[in-house]
Amino acid sequence: MNRAWILCRRELGSYFSTPLAYVFIVIFLLMSNLFTFSLGGFYEVGQADLLPFFTYHPWLYLFLIPAIGMRLWAEERKSGTIELLLTLPLRLGEAVLGKFLAAWLFTGIALALTFPIWLTVNFLGEPDNGVVVASYLGSWLMAGAFLAIGSCMSAVSANQVVAFILSLVTCFVFVVSGFPLVLDFFESWAPVALVDAIAALSFITHFNAISRGVLDLSDLLFFVLMISGWLLATAIVIELKKSQAA
Amino acid sequence: MIEVDNLHKSFGAFEAVKGVSFRLQPGEVLGFIGPNGAGKSTTMKMMAGFLAPTLGTVSMFGQDVWAEPLAAKAAIGYLPEGAPAYGDMRTLAFLKFIAAVRGIPKSRRAAAVDAMVAALELEKLLSKRIEQLSKGFKRRVALAQALIHDPRVLILDEPTDGLDPNQKHQVRRLIQNLSDDKIVIISTHILEEVSALCSRVIVIAGGQLVADATPAELAARSVYHGAVRVRCADPRVPTARLAQLPGVERVEWDAAGEFLVVVPTPGKTLLGEVKQCLDQAGIQAEEMYVEQGHLDDVFRSLTHTDSVEAA
Image (tube, rainbow over all chains, first blue to last red; front, side, top):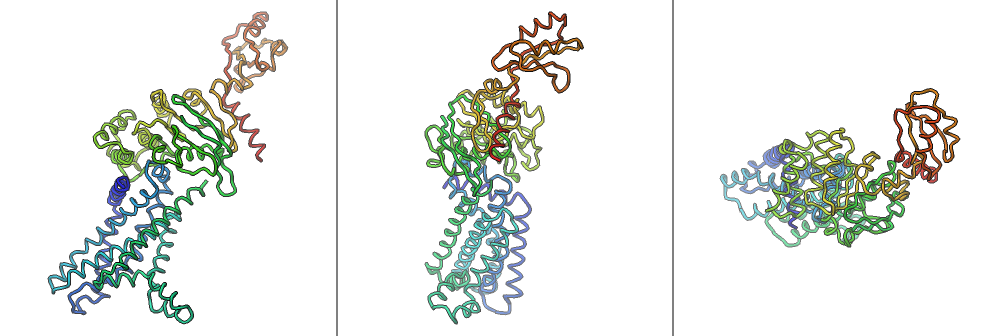
């Protein structure tokens, strides 16, 4: 566990050693504000809450998180450092976790930097800050789930562009699976249990529940399981891929 | 002790390594040679615990690399092919990171890094990003990474590849100066390196071990082992008479046309006879010596026949 943390610190350091991290944070902040104020109608709604801000997070993450996740393992494979990393005395699980944690903390930093909007809403009215905290937590958990998918896809392909597209597509499936449009399509022929299962897989369903301020254990568990499952898949894919490349 | 037992590795239908076994004792420096694609790197990757063998085992001092990976990996220092390192890190930060993951206690970490910096002359590189370093410097940083925890086993995949002669010399000296209780495994394409560094040579071809001997024993398998080389500008040199001496296989000129090479039938020594023959002819040789044999020519005969068989 300690070794995973050492690795995490190295990774996090390397994010900030290139301008890429700063560019990412700037884009994230610009986009989230753009969504909040123009699409979300933050002022027009006239309510002192951050719903217009959080509503668009799944869409924002859909494009931005795969961009972070794509380099996680693809770069290690491409540069050959994976051989160095995996011959150090650390478990594969620690390596997967350490790298994921670094990326997750990085998105956490980007998310935390949106605090001015929280200050704004507190200045303008009296929002339910408990709901805001829950929403931030939910958003960060959801980012983790997106990232875990990205981690797995990045292990699938040493090409970062391919990894980006694969995770974008996979994340998209998990986002839209809760949409009425998609569910209607299944409802016409599939059994109710299946439709419910598909709806339950949607990030949006669980995220919306949390961002309404309902901290249900099942929603938290959903994201935790998503993250664990995709990280486990990452480790399996890495193990498989190692034996393929001659 | 390292025990490599019946190691196999397949990539899909392709069998890269087919049943390699050997044992190494502390103090041995093993040279791993073989043509490209012979399975050297794959074998080393399995020994270092990166690739899982399809069949067979590797154990380091009694610890199986795959059953107890952490303990086995802790005993190993590994320089992968191409000497990869995190390019976005600075040298000092990289070495500190490796020392930390390697579990060197905080109190001794700085000393371990300093020792590597001194041994590999990295002083000027400490604050540079690894991606900005030249090939030779990068290789040295990667070597430092492999040595920092003073491992009992060193696995170096082509440690001098791409270095200039001075850098090669430096890396060789470093390997020679390692303490006597280590086990060192080096793969290389440079056969002189094997003679200069290794106490033992293993030749791999087509995924199989085709020779396991000391460099001298291997050289002795050369047809040129015991051959007498004579430098002589005199045109009257009695080539025909030399060729008829007992125990002479053939007489030939070397590629540059400078030396006359008298090749013996295996196991014969000829120096006395050749000298006598030249004296009788009244010819003064400018230079004359007995060859130990050519490793490259043994290498070719060992690995060539094998590739023909495989084809």
